[in-house]
Amino acid sequence: MAGGVILIVLGVLPKMAMLIESLPTVVLGGAGLVMFGMVAATGIRILSTVDFKDNRNNAMIVAVSIGVGMIPLVAPNFRQWMPHPIHPLIESGILLASIAAVLLNVFFNGARGDTQAVINAARQADAH
Image (cartoon, rainbow, N blue to C red; front, side, top):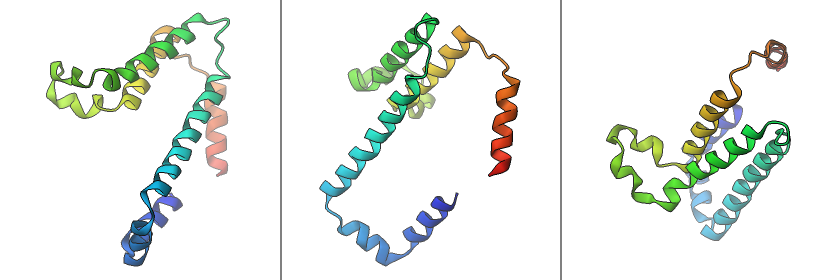
């Protein structure tokens, strides 16, 4: 939350906006590349903890989710057959992949109630 407040304050200051405007697009592109690379690396690290050997559904969930996430890139005109109100939701491959992963995980692996994990998460949230 503090980061958001800092960004809002810096966005209101004209001198800060002029400083950001003066940055070359190559520098911003490099920063974006590093940022998205870190997101991808974190995703790979998370996927390395998934049990693909004993639960074959997990591999299918990942494969189908990546495939669904690629639809806007491979077939950009696929939206013409979809209802217009959901167009903002289906323009992003990341959002489509996330929705597909969550729905497939609930369908194949179920929504198991791990009460101890919920209790531990609540304790960690209260500690901060």
